[in-house]
Image (tube, rainbow, N blue to C red; front, top):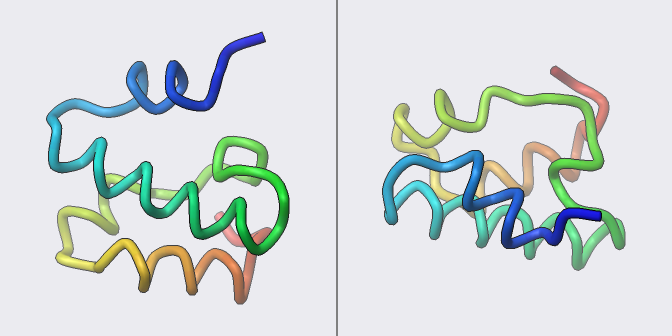
Length: 68
């Protein structure tokens, strides 16, 4: 089994995006008890590149977890 940190490390390119993803994952996990990689795929990098904060991305995911 791959740890959450290993999944984020392999998914992210760059420290800033990695930190952003870790925050989103922690917020989503606190709400659902599962992380972002256990939910349907989302366009995380696009959200990050558009300037969406980690809190906004987590809130969007929490409000509609099954969106792609």
